[in-house]
Amino acid sequence: ASDEGDVSQSFEIEVRNLAAPQSNLGNFLDSQALDFEPADYTFDLITTTNSYEFQYTVKPDDTNLSIQEKLSRLFNHSGVGLNAEIITDEKGRSALMLTSKQTGLSDSESVLFDIKPKASTDSIEAMETLGIHHITSPAQNASFILDGEEHTSYSNTFTVNQVFEVTLRGISPEDDPARIGFKTSIDAVSDNLNELADAYNSFIETG
Image 1: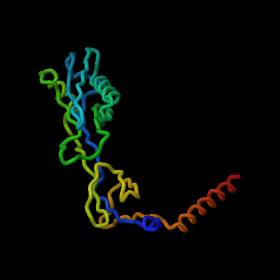
Image 2: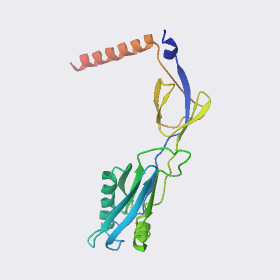
Image 3: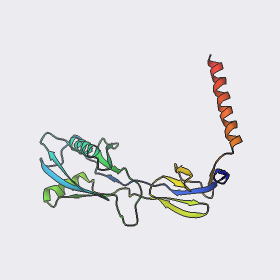
Image 4: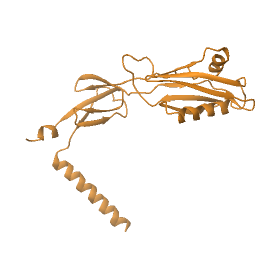
């Protein structure tokens, strides 16, 4: 059996949107001040697959920044599918930003993660100060037109016809799809020979 049919496969793709993660950006706080009452606080992180309880302690010698750094380490080392980082603004204030490692949403999902303080006045007030329970950038699916048909994907990397693995890098210019396919064997050999010649010439020049 000949594989020529597969080798000649090609398609056009026009990218409308890239798949994106969910981001929650907390409030920007004075890094050196302490806007939390020293105490123990608790909140829940609910993801699409699990629920986790987080606890943290605010001490009298803490600052807003040290609390944000403490929580950032807690998220990054807990393996819950989130990346945490500290963002600073032009006034030198700091905020905790949480971003899901996953991108895209299924039809049955409205968020990739949700943060809820425990139902105590102290934990609710602390979360209002921290602000990481607010979604600032919702997750979205990649959307693209493949040979004239609209498609979506949870990820920016997917397989087409079990032949091509495609990774989307950006939005297409309007009405300017990209054509993807295999080069003929002769073109591929020619390219490889040219690369070999270029590498050899470069070696000669630097020798």
